[in-house]
Image 1 (cartoon, rainbow, N blue to C red):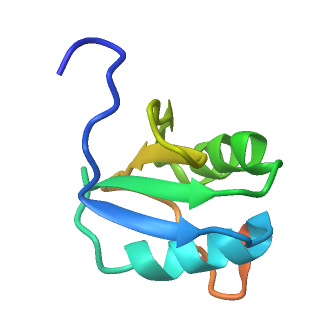
Image 2 (cartoon, helix red, strand yellow; image 1 turned 180 degrees about the horizontal axis):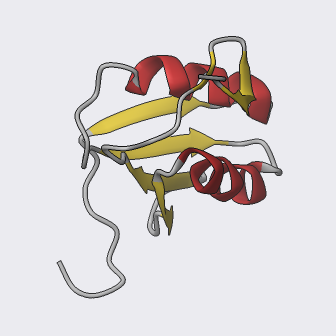
Length: 98
C-alpha cells in the first residue's frame, strides 16, 4: 500500500438508497462487534455522505480515510478506533452520556 492509498475493506456496509441518518444507524449496528483497526468501506449514495461521514468519524473518534477510487458507486472508507465514543442506538449524531 502506498501513501494515500485506501486499504482493502475488512467489512463493507451497503447504504445504497439510504439517507445519512439511516446509513449511520446501519453502520453503527454493523461495526458494533468489529475490532479496532477494522477498515470499513461504506457504500453511500446520499449526496450528503461526503460531508456526514467525516463529521461522524470526527465526533466518534474513528478515522475517516476518504473516498475509495475506482468503484462504480460512491464508496467511503474509515478505520475503527479502539477508543471511539459511542452514540445512542437510535440517534447516531448524539453521543452516549456516561
